[in-house]
Image (tube, rainbow, N blue to C red; front, side, top):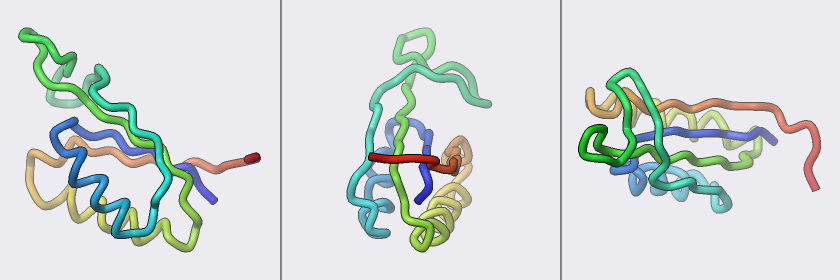
Length: 96
């Protein structure tokens, strides 16, 4: 089991959730409309810094992980506007 963390501009939340659903990742946390900064600038949901970020965290079995990452990579490469997507994989040492 690995912890997958995905950050994306909030307007693409539906697309990310569709990827997770297709790949059988049914349990995840979504931190919607959070403030962030990426290579394009600040996204604080204000007139000065429009837009916000969304952060997902999901426990993904290792046998599903590559397929999820491959689909996220395809999404990221589809359009220049998707290039801000980041996905991190972290080990889970213990879980209850």
